[in-house]
Figure (tube, rainbow, N blue to C red):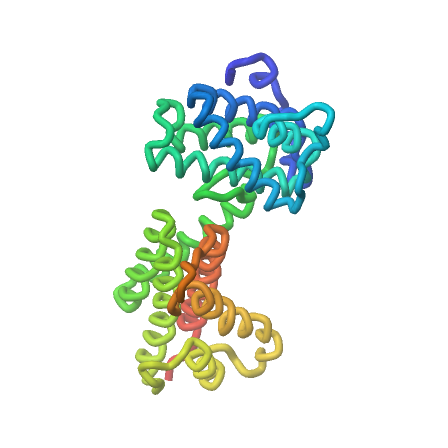
Length: 300
């Protein structure tokens, strides 16, 4: 299907679409899902699509996706029609994530034994459909992301690794790389914990280099206070960095504290992929700024 006339001769310079999800790629995606699940057998097929249907209704907040009182539809048909005809772009991506994550779970737990159900192969096919239709998003690491964001995030991560790949910042480098490995393995709570460790290690390494005193158990907020007191971030720019300080002192620690660092109680805490990804990039941006500020800081 990749060598059809329309694909070979499409205008490669068309701008990417970010605010619309046309019907054509939706139909192509659901045809792919239908083909993948068709050979499950009637009982397993029904269980799979009933599960999908239930999750979609919960996500979009509707008791019925389609008014089918005169022409009852199966769970698959209702999910398909809603996705193709009624879902907003946000709902469409929610549905895509719901189905992909359920397929991944089924494949990893031997509920689906189909050669083409390998999640990496499915992901490539989904992204090929999006690419061929100039949709400015792709499915990656269990979530839909904007392609321009992906490039920006890659630059942030590469810069963080390069900046910390210095003997002085060895500990921070190891902790940030560990956070990335946990993120890749979808061990999101562990990713948050290591991201914060990398952030705090960066601060402490800078303080040690300047002989700035701090308590060993100081929180991120306390450590950042020391940055401002010593004008690592200059006082005359303090008002301009109010937003940065709020982000640095509350963004990473709050995400980690609320989702990864405390006891789970009787209900297991799940850290969504989107939240973990955001925390990793926020950490990288913050570390990059702090090391740049450290390198530019006047030495006595």
